[in-house]
Amino acid sequence: MNFKSKKNEELDLNLTPLIDVVFLLLIFFMVTTTFDRETQLKIELPQAAGEQRKAEKSLEVSIDSKSRFFINQKEIVNSGLETVKKALKQAAGDEKSPPLLISADGQATHQSVITVLDAAGQLGFVNITFAANQPKSKK
Image 1: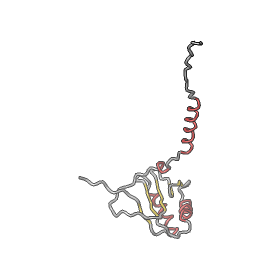
Image 2 (image 1 turned 180 degrees about the vertical axis):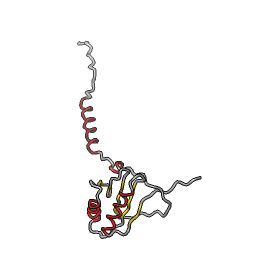
Image 3 (image 1 turned 90 degrees about the horizontal axis):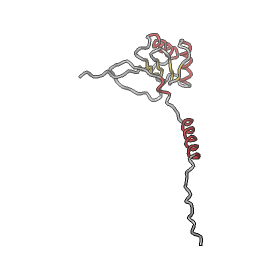
Image 4 (image 1 turned 45 degrees about the vertical axis):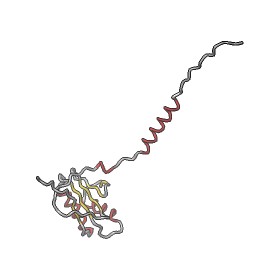
């Protein structure tokens, strides 16, 4: 009879494949994550009391505090009148006079707003709206 005691083998868990899988998941999520581009444009709208309206299919021209122009969240390279006209015409596409929403920062120059109005007027846009915040009620 053989009464030798058997050695208990110690079990160990190999973590190398698990770490590889975690790194692959990390890379996958980093590559597939999309970032919201609207957060890049920060506009502090002026306050105005009045009727609130929301046009369904309108062109949005945004002017930030540094008087840079954005049409439908896409920056215009040059702030000249001809460049603004070309960008508005391209964004309008086949529509002759789509509704135009101007969102100008309270710190934007008056000239930049007038440039957009002039370009829109020369292109024949007649339905122009300005975006503003409701004034805070005083209690």
